[in-house]
Image 1 (cartoon, rainbow, N blue to C red):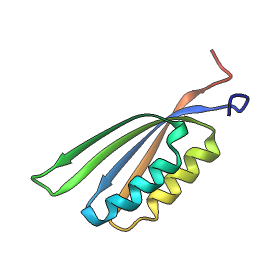
Image 2 (image 1 turned 45 degrees about the horizontal axis):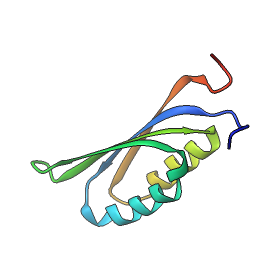
Image 3 (image 1 turned 90 degrees about the vertical axis):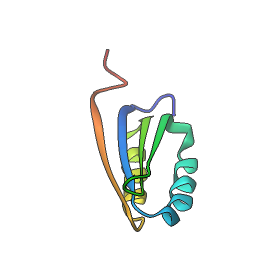
Length: 89
């Protein structure tokens, strides 16, 4: 991991049904070495959860995580990448 070029990315996730949370948490645990921060907000009024994941990882890892999350039922996700890679200062 140390020699690979990495980027910072934020994955914004909206979970619309509580039954999707267990699978989502399992996927996030799988990628935990790359996750540098996580914030979850339950929005009780709308009965949804909003989660932000901040990663420092190679592009392929970020894309793989986003793809797996995007395939979950009742879960929406979008990823925003930094323009700066780990090779730049």
